[in-house]
View (cartoon, rainbow, N blue to C red):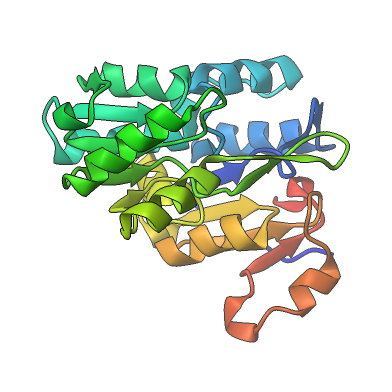
Length: 263
């Protein structure tokens, strides 16, 4: 299945299921990205996953055959750091998250604190070492009025073989339940924030930007919410039956077998 896709000034690519599957490139992905790069368009690779760094994604892409620097990658912690930098000056932040989140916050001058009494912001992310004590400290900070920020709302993260583990969205739901609050800002998909940051980095408008991904509930919703053109690829979790079930006003602008058909 394919649609004729015009050339855009900026391209936002989801990664797993769109550019690669696990440790293998989608056939033709490297040629597509190389051809777009040769035409001078903006390219950003995005991921919600908050336990990997932008540099690690750039290194993986390069290893698989797509030349990429960290400037071409945008993760949910990177997008959240961008938001905090724009709205706060050296804030005190209590974090439920791992080193990729902490390092992004330190780069922008955040002061990482451990006590609810010291926290101006609570950042909720995927934390595989979280304890009840840390959960309660974050809850107490929210009760005191700290800002409630989340890297990504994914409740689970899929693993090889079809299993899943809990993700940041599960901790977000816990905090919503006990605090009676909803997040003040969510950086990751399906929030449009990730696309907004990507476009700001590329210097493109929504009308000039195409977001390509394989998930209807995250990639497609993110792109549409941000006002971008959208393309859904059938190389990941979505198939033709899933697309057919969508209401007409929720469908992507383009449907492609894979990004090899993009040009």
